[in-house]
Image (cartoon, rainbow, N blue to C red; front, side):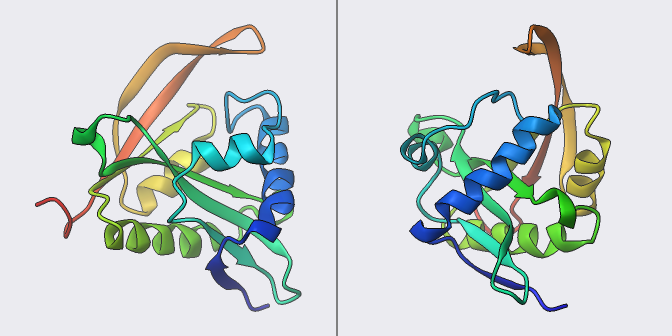
Length: 165
């Protein structure tokens, strides 16, 4: 099967949110408990560095995008990675294709640090990020509640080797 990475387009929004809902339903991918509106989703991510992965039927099976970590000017080159796949396509090695594209594109747009915050029980995601050059920074204890239960977050980061040296 062939796969194609392309820029996320407005017509992808519904499918992107469907895949995000799967992440919400998993209870190990996000603190979100309700699907945001398209407008809320769009305003929470940078308008650049948005990619989708399609199968050979032109069906979106995964997406990635970057969120700002702060509005302060000193952090303009730091972003949080969001990467989600349709549950049927997990574990097939496709995430690496999408994440490598996001890393390259982020550097083109001047980002010097990418970070991910992952629930400790999402071991597959932690290993995936480490395999793709992210290093574990540490664990933030009881940083927020999900369905009434305090959750830790493992923070990982990837520093660019070409931007912000």
